[in-house]
Every structure is written in C-alpha cells, then in structure tokens.
Length: 321
Image (cartoon, rainbow, N blue to C red; front, side, top):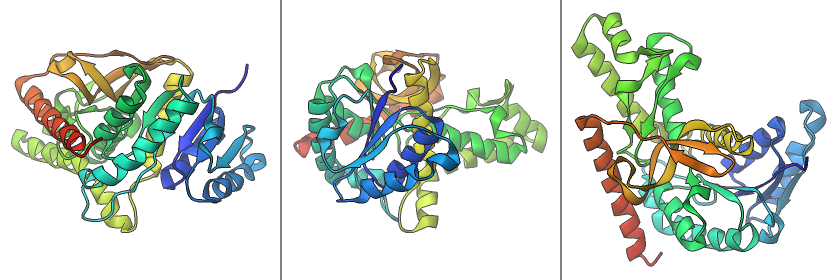
C-alpha cells in the first residue's frame, strides 16, 4: 500500500518537530514547505540523516515551492509568527491572516482533496479563514488546540494528585484563548472524579475548589507561561505532538474522540462557527461531533468563549479577510 503524503506548511519549531515525529512513527512521506530559502531543506536533511539510527524509512523533502505539496493526503499548517512575551494570540491576527490567505490559496490549488489541520494562531480565526478561502468541506478543515489544552489540564491534575498522567482524562472546550473552558465536572482518574479525589486529599471542599480553580487558570494561561520562560518563542513540542495524535486518528481511521476546533451546525447552541468540541476523527476528518449536556455554569462559560471567537472572526472580516 502506498504511503500517505503529508505536507507541512511552515518550517519553524513546530514544523521541525512534526517532521521528526512523522518520520519516527512512519506515518507517511513528508514535504516540508517554508518561504525561507534552504531552511526546510536543511531541517529535513538533518532528520533523514538519522533514519538509520532511528530505523525509519520514509521520504522527507524540504521545499520553497508550493507545487511540491501537490496531491497531499493531509496538510498541517503552522505558518505564521509565533507569540512573544506580552503578546496575546489575538495580537497575531493581521499578520497571520495575510500569511494564511496565501497558504489557503496554494493548498486549494495543489492539494484540493486533503484533510487540513491548522495550528497557526489565533487558531479559531485562522481555521475559519482557511475554510472560507478554500471552500473545502468543513469536515476536512479542523484546528488543533483542544488536544493540547486538555493534555496541559491533565498534566496539572496528575501533578496535584500524584498519579500517572496516563490515567487522567480531562477535556477542554471552546476557543483557544483565555476564555477556553476546562470541563471540571467530567475530569477523572480512571473514572474516579477529580473533584472527589481533591476533596479527600484536603478534607475540605473549599480548598479542593481553590486548587481546581488554580489548575483551570494555569491551563488557560499555559501557553503564555511557556513563552515567558522561553523568552524567544512559543511552545512547539506539545502542539506538534498534539497534532500527531489527530493525524494518527485520521490516517489510521481510529475514530478517536478528541477535542477539536470543528465547525458547528447547531451543536451546543452554536451555528456557523469553529469552536473546540469533542469530535470523532477518522478517515473523513470530523465524522461527527459528540454533544453532551452542559450544566448552566459550563454552558455560560462556553457561550462566553464562543462570543470571543465571534468577535475575533468579525474583526478579521472588518480587516478585509
């Protein structure tokens, strides 16, 4: 069976890690595109020269020509400026919208049948813009944010409870920004409610809530925390790894339920916008949205997050995108 062709648009930190992970997992042949001359060629050459050591056998190619992505089965987009200390994701809107417009036009031309995963920030707006320009079916255009945000939330829970993160299940919904919505009520350790475990640990409901509120806030600000520490860029390994989880579910038709920035058509009371929700990812991209009953507080938080997404999309529209 022929290997899948995966195009990566953007040869920065995330793009480089994506090449490495795809190669090591042998998910498909890779074309890494970037506008910077020789950068993608250098990164792919460096990684492929480790193929004997890491025992992978796929084709890796760097290019500065969009034509080389022709016929790709899957496209992952990281192109755009990363956040720097003091910047919000929304601060990137104008610059990255211009970049995304060019990317979308070329993907539409050369890879019209691809499933597309967008990582570029501000995430919800960039996914919306890509789909608008290409006109691709909404099930084939999705954004990576929720897998990462949920992993961060699960990590903080595992640290607090002193348990393996492998046994922590946590879900973050909504827009990829300060209004994201960690779903506390369903967070669990192999089915055991996290709030109950926190209450047992502290023997105090108020203290348990205080600790959970701190973890929720840290999850919302986790990207900024990494940026502050790095000083010269933003997170790159965790976003790339999160996109790989989505990629595997799509290419292997695993039908995993993953938090995905997906187009909603009435689910959770949202129509016509891309928002982070649990979705089944398979060979056709988003195969269905998993809708469940939110309580009043959760619904209010999601509505507030959707409001922020709408404002961002409207701002982008006013700017002519």
